[in-house]
Image (cartoon, rainbow, N blue to C red; front, side, top):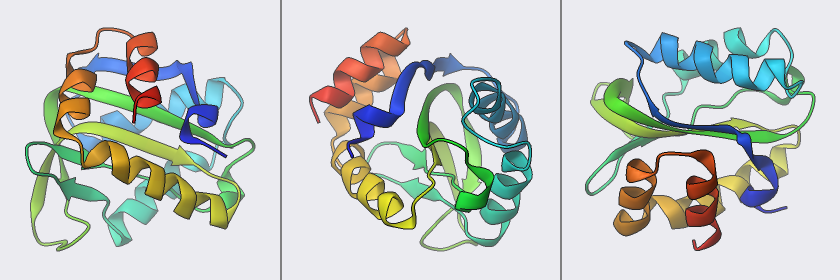
Length: 152
């Protein structure tokens, strides 16, 4: 399965304005929940897992995060993509004592454990490409983000 199979136009948010990581999680959870992709428990699952296993990644020019949780909170697999108008602080995946100013988020709702690894591999191609990230951050709507992901 490809990441494009899981990214739907309705699950892409551009230039999102939120005050905190918690607010970000609520907005993205609501998108997934209202569309029937996740259970009510998903939000707590995301917050709890992020507290134990941070997902912030400091890239060469930008900060990204890939929050996800256990499959029991997922009904149907999906990926929410959000670009942020102002960075939100996440803890670093590599060193949880470090903060990462995150500009772009890929929230995974994955039902099969093996699919998570595959999604992470596919996302790494995007995250390692500053040009693609720049285009994503400048995009104004979901269709643009999906087209950019197609080129990865």
